[in-house]
Length: 305
Image (tube, rainbow, N blue to C red; front, side, top):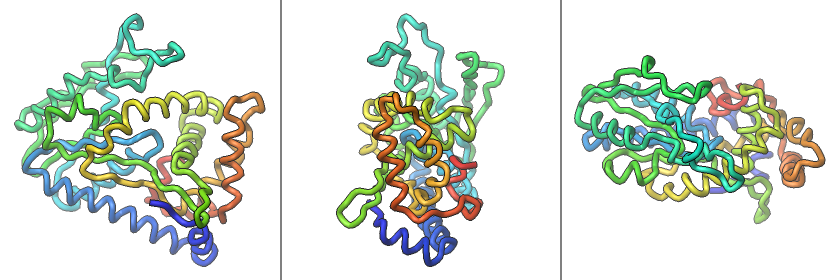
């Protein structure tokens, strides 16, 4: 799917609030479609697997799907697969081509425990959801949380490796969702803003606002994040029951207010400066929307606060 720049700018000029409301309404319809799918599949499996690359809005989308399911009387438990990380011996840990530990690799996950937990939940048994402390790079068993699903309850496992066939092969009935900001913005037949730029912008603004990381730090990580997507995430999206496009037609107009000063500050010696300047210049094609106008329940608040 692609959006048209002329239509976006016209809508922003004519009625910013109405435009954003309609975009959020279309996003909510996708949430409802995901909830429909989960409800339809509940009798086969109470396990929901939600995957997607960095900056896709997985966290907010999982919360919104949870709210929609609860509105329908379905009890929902959302579990971050980050808690299934394991501490690896540096001598045997997977490595990137540059020799760094590859934290994007599924080998950093306890795939066997995840698969075991999927099976136990499906059988109605209790599991102990682990807690991984990233500051200490180790699991804290004292903070494990018991979970047993009752009737009309589901467990949503959210993480970048949720659709990896090493996990899903043994659980073919689990509901599988893939979320990403996938849409480009076109000016007729000319590409003005790439879908991957949307995710990079989301990541850069979020990292700056909430994680104390400047744009240079985000860029340093982004190359390996993208490498991980191509190796470990995108190859499995075709296995999803639903591909959920989380991009919003108005988001570039909002993000321009944050991203321009961030990205323009990239030092001249940075290897990706040329690409970033191309991205910064792309914002100039868009009418802007003041961040204060963004609806309070918008997905964008996951990134802008």
